[in-house]
Image (cartoon, rainbow, N blue to C red; front, top):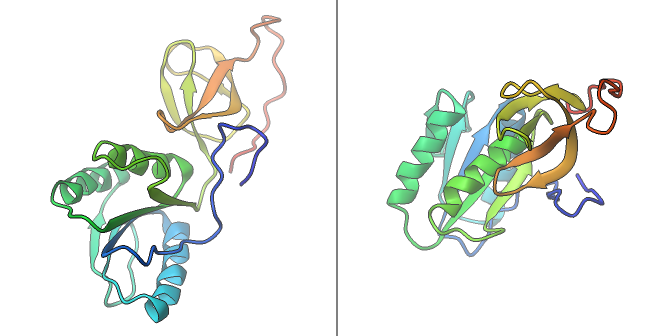
Length: 191
């Protein structure tokens, strides 16, 4: 995923564990993310002898990997808070899953002093976007089209490529601001 838009995050295409870390915590959401993680861990076992703790939703991991399983992403993020409350130096944090999830994990990490770029992120699964309404500040999850009706103010938003790392969301602006009633065609872009 690359973009000419400077605010748009650029991600790697592979999860690589940092060999300087003492413990690796990988927050994972979704089956596609689990498949990527399993592949990365198989490679890492050959080169890096480190414990890996996985915070996981909805799937099983290979034997020998300590797993904390959660029913949903909200529960996983609360579990991540609990884990970071007792964390020590040398912990490395990774997130694998849909983009909105990656930035939710980053937000938790930032509240514990992780700096910009200290959470390795690998997108997997849906490309649906989290959208922030620039008019009423409502946030919508799972947006798959270029246009979206804001649940907060009812405005039809154009989903922009401008991304806020702080909010972990793409910006939505009034689609017919210049010519009221003149909306572009709705196109599904983010499956």
